[in-house]
Length: 448
Image (cartoon, rainbow, N blue to C red):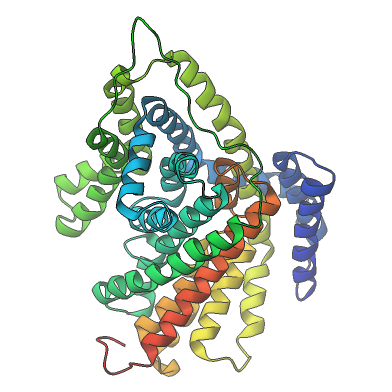
């Protein structure tokens, strides 16, 4: 197998080939990802007999995590939209933040939601608000997609008990309570700068790939649709979020008990969304005029291509991960004279880009730097937060989240890179800047 600097060259060429196939040759992203995954494995020199297994395992493992989630999420969102619940929630956001600040409101909502909820699930659940808010405010769809996506990924990387930050706190020996507080404080400016401000900037410069999809529900004269209440709309939206949050809380308060086991089951992201979908099918019936068969067909049709592309992104990511590119980059940079907080950020950022997984990037970086905390002479909280900040941005096509944002946000690959990838990078830099601000008050702030 290829080793050393040539691995970096192959990684860059693989990304270039992927962009060329999708943007210039206009081959469907699913096919492009699978082709590049196999080609990259061959060029790296992986054993021929192992390559099919690596690609298919990466595909399968990714869908094991998000396949059911995407399918249920699309159906759940379809029923929320058809019942008018999305419209009601959009009206409430507009009332609370006002039209001009509504993207900031959506971004901060995403920041809160993504603490207990898996990123992909949260984006699927909240993406329906984008179209409605854009239609009501006249603000670009791109602005809302960027604000929502960045808000979600920021807290996914910065705030425990999300798995990545939780492991970082453990590996660095940081006090978990303080780590959560400082993580939240880092998340707010990161979301506002990378999501709202950058989203407002890019929204004026990029035209959305398609028309805004405002759900028009046909009205049957014999059976007119009832108007759904704002309270029920929020209750339906919050149901999966609350179930997942109860799982997290029960583990903290009643670890190892029957209560924790029960909420561990109903609060599993797949079970929580399944329960919510069943409840939506039953509870929203009076507010839906369309035939359920039509709603199911449309949802399943939309979910199919998203699932295929997401799995293919995981296959490509598995090949990159197996190649050892991440390990080589870490070894190469450890000898450089870079300030430790910046080094922690860069380590995590490079792994995020090369492996396609924010959680893996956080776990790997903290596993390397965590045991060195004593000789590094830096606060465990500051080091941990710098690592978490590095996991936010540079989401590339080897990241399943890239394709979730692209497909649900209805963005082209180029638009996704300019809005989501760059917006996340700016948010990560903002979070790192906040960490450096905290470091100025070393000895004054608790734990710093």
